[in-house]
Length: 311
Ligand SMILES: [Zn+2]
Image 1 (spheres, rainbow, N blue to C red):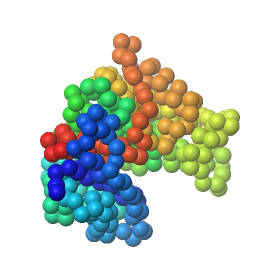
Image 2: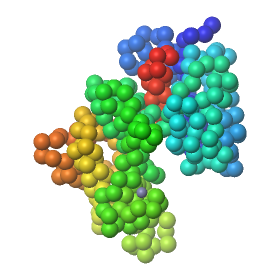
Image 3: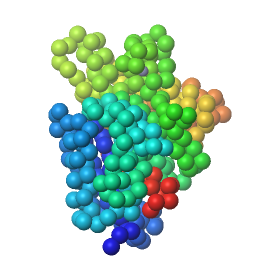
Image 4: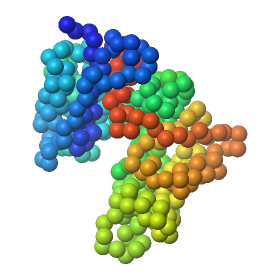
């Protein structure tokens, strides 16, 4: 039997996740789908394109239990050419440059495949199944080890001319600020991402201890003034980025996901205040937490198939 199952794959750097949805069920039709099966494996150290692809194909076949999927939607943690399904590069795992991911998965699963980058796919997931439901336009932003974003405009992903739209992490909010890994100064990511906030706290305290973004939030919650200042500066930087984005495209909603968004009221207040102060007074930025957590890319992969008319 075929024609019931949509397979979602998420190549998340060190994590390879997959889920199967029964697209024929009433649950799906009502807009609150559930996974028929879901699984995750970890990409081992020394992994490359071939070993990751083989591990993901094995996981997908296991979850499908011998069924052939109707179609396969894919979230990839790096730049992808959506039209051809070819990976441009991976920031995490070597050997992915110019990998024909779509063609290889089509051969492995005997089904049509669509591939897009993780931020675009997660944006679509939140739009269709999460906090974005009922809105026409949104910017989804993930704030964790990096800061990435994806647009949905008029119900469709907006990928941009080269597929690089939504890079709010490398919009500049402080041209005289510290240098970012991209070579520019004062990017949102340089100020707001977990690892950079952690490094800034360690530097400020002259500490040999290596902090994490989560630890910065914990110390801030305990009242440690340096941690509070760095966390608030991160929230401010993101908020300025959102306010600028609001002035440019005036989306209905901003949806924030990723580990740093668990940093508490101090952070959320800083984000909202800076966004409101940056946007024109007539522009209202509705900034909300994401609903789907780590599952956003998997749900987005299913939504990608739905938009393409494949499930
Ligand atoms: Zn940058």
